Length: 541
Image 1 (cartoon, rainbow, N blue to C red):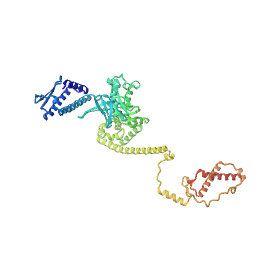
Image 2: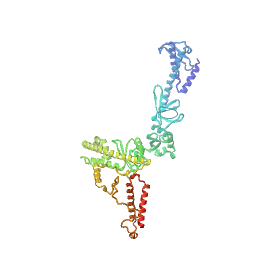
Image 3: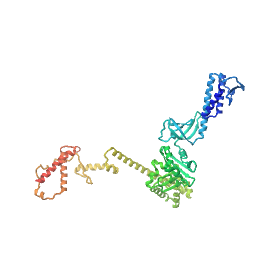
Image 4: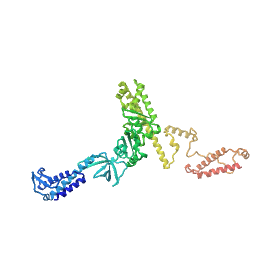
């Protein structure tokens, strides 16, 4: 056996696998002991010892402390197989220990690897001589990698599971953005600019609060860079995720205003007892302050550590009025106590109920009985306000659903009566009204409803008793051509006469047994034209 060649192989493995040479030699000694035990068929682990010369690579076996005249070539095939298995197992253990020791020191560091494959939604990334995996929860939503793609990520955690070392990678962690700023902004890496807080919704938007130690360095401007060059590199790395740079301030009120930008803020009221901030914004800034699906206010709350409520001036004043109306009538409650409540940040009956009697008695310096009465009254009124708000919400949802239904019908091309769209909902008519109308019609078929709307009757009343129409060519009774020639022309009378003739034509069609729905414009028009011709002939005569 060429011992020098064996030592060169051990040195090569130590360099490639980043394993210490001494550990490999100890593994070789343990493997030789296992092979000797297999050869002599013994289970006593202390019966054999092995020594390997670190310089020459010479192997010496001992049994019960006595040198054993047995070369490795004489051990046999089974013992050699045992030697091989033990060596492979020991090498893997050493390599796993080396990987764990190396990467456990690099937790929180940005690394660049190559995407290999997907396993159960996790991306397997090759990093140097190890494989890391990025769970689905640590991926940016919407990102997809192909084998061979370059992946830049953060080492989030390193776990030794016994059989392998799991290197957990992340691209959705807020620390990933922090490290990107350290790479792209030298002032952050040099600690001239400090990143105070980060709030992030991966793939959508992030807010980063920064502060400068040097008064001559603008923290926001340095992070943005010339024409946005620095921040643009970070945004590109995050696949277009929006990043808001917020100027840090030790005052929570100023910090909340900065965090809610670009929305304008009128007032910020802080309640330290509840950890809640009530922010008043103009009516036209409400949607901007809340953000799309509440994203802006949610990120601002994470960044500042305050629970933020956004109100309009009308809602803010209404809450104060309801609280004053509820607490003022109570015995022992003064205006000064109400002012203290407002200074505490309690701007509604809900806040008073949540603060509790003990805190109120301590802060307002009043009796416990008065504080308990205030909490009880506020709790009762809070239930009423909550029910009213729920009703208003349901009404708004109902109106929104109706408007959406009308819009969908219009988009489909259905006819929608504009009056029906805006009219109030119809009220069910009591049965006695229909009975009264039916009795009136049975007594007088020509009866009309109050309000001037005529009642239509189908089938129409009999026309047998009606006067016979004037035959064509015959003048009307009492008609004087001279009087007609000298009489002034009345256009309105002509229109009324035309309308009367039209009604006669309709009744004539009805007498023939034609249903009104079968009448068309082409059928009625000939009757109207005939009646007009008759009228013109009468005038000529």
